[in-house]
Length: 222
Image (cartoon, rainbow, N blue to C red; front, side):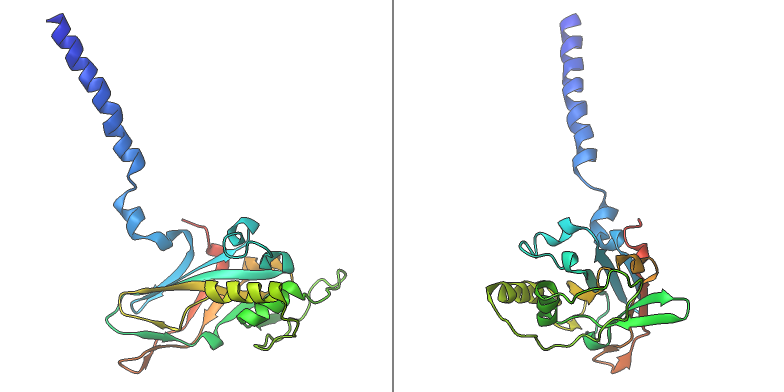
């Protein structure tokens, strides 16, 4: 009887760690179904927009292994569109702006850089005045300053491939990519920054969606 009791207890002792491991190794269903929770997001009318500003150098290493935009004062913002409707939604990417507050009476809109503009900003950064507390942001442009050497070409390609691949979110699909904003190193402005998306359209119904204005400082909150 003692031997049988010992064998039963040993079996239970072996089984319990393996059973407990299931709770450690298998994430809860809610975590699997809501991958956007780590980012700042806004959702209405069947569309969810999630944004995550990349403020750490490690976040850039995979996409930009040689020269990080962050070191040149440029911020990458990962944006994800999740369309839970039965219709296609078009986003006017040219109208997207990063709203920043320079002072109480000075709120500026920063346009996203193109891939060529990003390459210019990273490899040919403008000289910055260290005595200036706040500078006016230049208007980005799609053209290049020239000097298309190997490094420029590689950087432009990396920016293009990491960016949004199109501007239409198919029904029940996601669209994800990076947007680039030249903050000239003034990353403290993110404390009050908002990403503004004013023009979104339901294609099949020719109907406009309400604008999105997402507070970037909420990113990382659970």
